[in-house]
Amino acid sequence: TTLVLLMAVDNLAAITDTLRAHGLAAETPAACVVDGCAPQQRVVTAPLAELAGAAGVGNPAVVVIGDVARFAAERPAPRADPAGSAPVPERVLVLGGARSGKSGTAERLMAGHERVTYVATGPAPGPDDPEWAERVRQHQKRRPTGWTTVETRDLEGLLGAAGEPVLVDCLATWLAGVMDDCAIWSDRPGADAALAARVHAVVAAWRAAARTVVAVSSEVGSGVVPDTASGRRFRDELGELNARIAAECDRVWLCTAGVPRRLR
View (cartoon, rainbow, N blue to C red):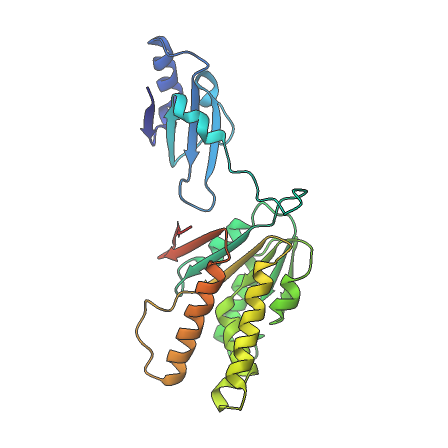
């Protein structure tokens, strides 16, 4: 028999005492899934008699009591390299529209790492665009002191190096800058081939990354169809880039109205 209790943490001690008084053994497996389906989800496991006082138990949560709770403690083993000597770093993509909470979600995914390289791919703020400067300032203010900020579009080189985890924010601004670098908008001969080569190189570097990497990107395919050829070209290129990166990820998240949902 398995009991599943929703939002029962406030009365958990009384519930466990009642269950024991009616014959359920003190050592019965129990688990508390806190913030389920969110990036910060955690699972606390303990015998029934100890669950209410276990560290980390809190609402919102689902409490599971019974034999099935044994499985809550079983996590998939980290992927190993071909030699079996070390875990392969994780690759994560966080998608979302404007103001969807995607950057904050990606930052929370990195919360367990003391040192992180934050890669800012957008243009540096200037005096002629105070709104962009304020956006950058708000992002900077959220970063922990142990994080190092790198402003670059050389994702290929950065992803190919070993070191601390990397958070890329974001692929959309990277692509916009690379399209400018390749002179896509001026129809320079070879521009399309140059862009394809850069995208292929960054996907290959992402696939082979030797450290944990989390990337933020904009999901633009669900919005209004751009009324310019350049807007439609950018939308299509970004959609293809997102799909190729997602195909190489261990986890993919989609943020909508501040709510992250795991797609993979």
